[in-house]
Image 1 (cartoon, helix red, strand yellow):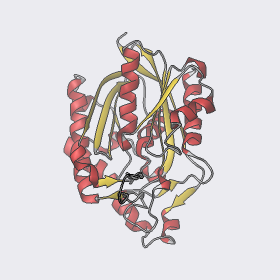
Image 2: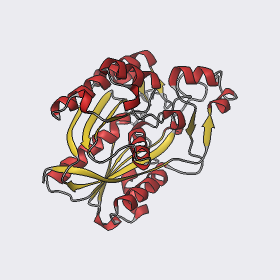
Image 3: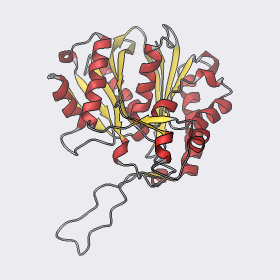
Image 4: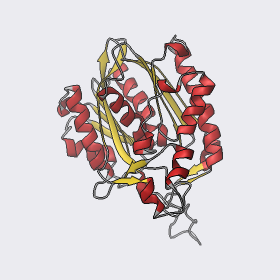
Length: 323
């Protein structure tokens, strides 16, 4: 076996559309302010669906498009930071909802890089002969953590899910890259459960459970990390930047993508961008964009496609795939 290929993909976003115009009535902002600074025009918000619900729909669509039965799935890996419970995991909930009775299921948290991290694990499981079919899902309901009074962050995030099915193939994932920068972790935070038990004099104060971001620091990191990751997978894959047909970037901010295109000296049209419709959906953004590019026929046979993401942790990941 030489490669692990993406057999097919699927995606799902909630039906509720939150436009920039809608946000003008919620926080001190404007459509022009949001578009010029981010490129985002609208995003989807979950109203009556939880993380595992959204993930399950994307998973079913990926299975259907891959022509793979739910019983054939050996592993379900869900990349998310917004599961509805600490346990059971979102992956185990998805397993139950789609009926993948033979799968081992677990979550991982790589924030916005999570889908790439999960893809790397799925590839490794198949190459190690531990699995034949792996379902990889990136899903977030980030609206849970949005501070609707903070105009710098509430305009950015949306909800959704994307999924792919991995299997052995004659072509597919050529190389992968990942790296973490824990010393920069406090640049982007969502608070969790603090230490608190009967043996403590006072409980530890919890971090705010809303999204907090040092925009300037994250922008600086994202642009350099994205450029380095694309260059790394091209070099390790034995191709030049000119050989890359399409880049599927994390859909965080148009300015970040534009900056990276200039640094890489690549035409911005090589970057598939749909953040204007969905905003930043964290670990779901790359698979949602990948699925749309496949559905529209933009990705064709034998194309070299790079998927690249960056996010909380801070983290970065990329992969070069021959379709």
